[in-house]
Length: 207
Image (cartoon, rainbow, N blue to C red):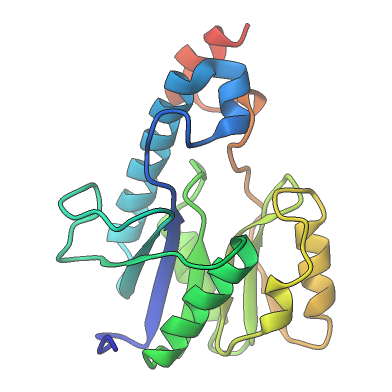
């Protein structure tokens, strides 16, 4: 068991950045090499955002834990994800965090170039008087989910990766006080790159 340094844990789910194994839908538009490069940029952005947050932080790796990588071992706790699908993996990550005696647990995705420290800070604050906080994504999913106790229903019976996830999740929480954050755009397809100057060269590849 990990001894908390704060009452809040921020979880980030990340895939190990390997060619052909990340952002497969994006790769259909810009190629596997481009998709990997974009994903690494997204990871770097996420790390810069998290570094500014005053809370405990944990990186959950899709395959195996890596030391001496982008995520500084001094700043970030590191664990491997486990479970048969995304819902199970997230549920297990939340359960582990609550078992480690965190009072607020927030998970974020790693594919949002619009993510700012303020979004996470607002989520932490919202959990002072709400049971759950959620950051909707424009594609019908969510980029952030935070709670003060484990609500297992939100991790079950979902068609992960589809535009039904947010609606289905909110239906599971209809009797719970939920705070909604700003809706953001996550990057899954080539067209999602268009608003960002940083990804201009990859947009040209898709034209």
